Length: 420
Image (cartoon, rainbow, N blue to C red; front, side, top):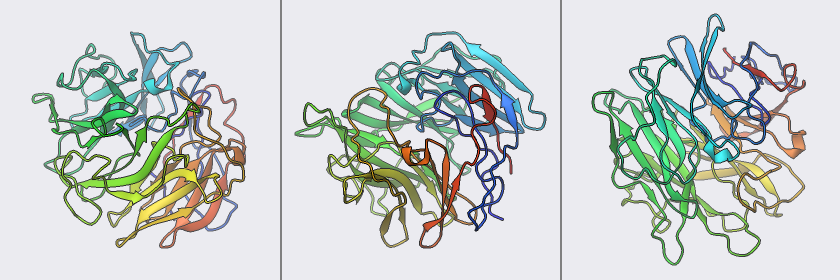
């Protein structure tokens, strides 16, 4: 039996809502049944944009000792943190005072959980000062610090707060990855947390830096960072430059890769060659030469298989100029890439702010048997959630799992938690 992660949830772009896609079985036939396992009412979520559902939230949900914690903006724009007891589905919610500007989907909420059980929250920042709080008691949402700095360095122009939970006895308790600067002139910086007594420390230099490029500057956009079973941190990313013309087409160039075996101190290529830091567009490890104007989406997803090899899900143009979902992975000798969708209608990533795009960013998961699942919604699915199964070693599409029902009840107020 193929098993999905123990706890997983998806949220709709309208409010907070979800339902299970595969149950606990990834079957070898196309008639996979769709069935909700558990539905927990949380209340209405902010529905004017995708701020509660953007893929670069890291994390939207964390689990520890029989409890799950999450955060979202409610219908009034308030920041709500919730706690669920897994065995009983009892839920406690608290609203944190403040102003959060949810009309900008960049201002999403990311949640971290350190080794001692303290919750960390970062939110509502788009090229602005760091906004960060920490719970004052382990595994409790009832009391929080005021907004506080981490180290005070490089905290004036923060976007895309990302909490990472490293593995290993000598690892830091948390890693915080974020962008310092703007979309086309920025750096990807890291801070590490050693616990309540020691606090946060900056990793110097920032690992990815496009701010000083000549003749143009650029900014790094990373896919979901992923840890291997050996504790190594895998990072894939693209570089964004300014639009070339008045059409304001988004220019993301190339897929790149680097691996850190020591939680961000040193960085290596896929073949083990040590990078000179910072990594810039000039010395970046390019694994797919995708040029400007190819509609490469920034901030896709990645996951590591049992052999410590990275897999990515993203989209960019096919040879006919039509954006298609793609799966890219390292097979131990070379990077391989395949198209896994068959769209027939072209569009361009262009404009500013929160774009209305006919294809969502994809999410990728790998189970204990190295089966790969790619989740998305698109115009060709009627905007329904879809799971595509890719079976090793060739990873050709084996099963389309299309949600056969509409959302659980009304899409307005439900959230489902999945347990296998």
